[in-house]
Length: 293
Image 1 (cartoon, helix red, strand yellow):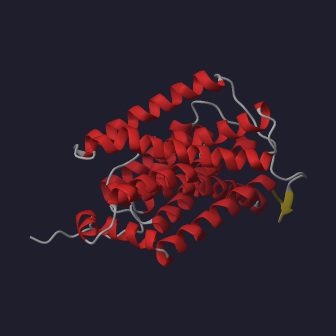
Image 2: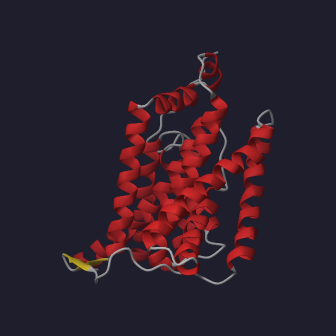
Image 3: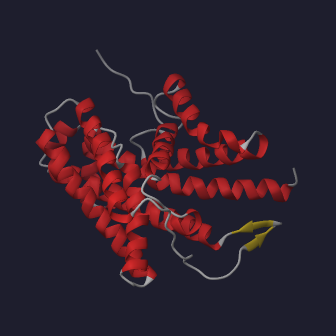
């Protein structure tokens, strides 16, 4: 394999990793505020792309406006999901909440199929022009948009976490939710906001990747699994570790195509998830929790 071909696979892996990073961040944000895995995160990815296509193709909105409204609408759906499905059961066992998120995922997928149909839908690329050649490898312009969106999201989230009262409240809630509530943090509002923010991040990924891969009502499950695997690989509960895990997972997938077979591409995420859960549950970049007795 030539160096240009290897670089091409690396570019593809980093592009996929950037998409997984946005979903992994959504998983991490919700987990940090609730200690629950939101398995509807993949459907927020699907809704972002589907709503953007609907706004652009059916309503005739400019592409940029359709994309922004899709992200905002999906964030609103995330908030409504928390208020209607999660908040009434806040006293339930965490496993019951996880089952509710699985049910919500199935409901959103079914509603999307009835609303938008079973066919694949597409968006035009954000930028016109051919691919950019880099040391013999082709770099698609839409991939630059995906990487840029992921980078901006990570930077903004980092600023929010470190410089705002909301971010400090999220960090406090992640350390000890009960203690944060006793210190005056409105944990219910925080949980609602975390679902909205996670939905917006998923929608961003869905909007950005649709010009490359198209979208359909059933794309959320597989991408959601990979976002979850990335969060586990990096370290669930740590946003920046989740991003690192997503990039590693994207590269592993791409290199498996290069050196093994494309038939095993979708197996990699599941294999990585199982290996990390068995060998290092805290993730590659997470710290093992120690319980004092």
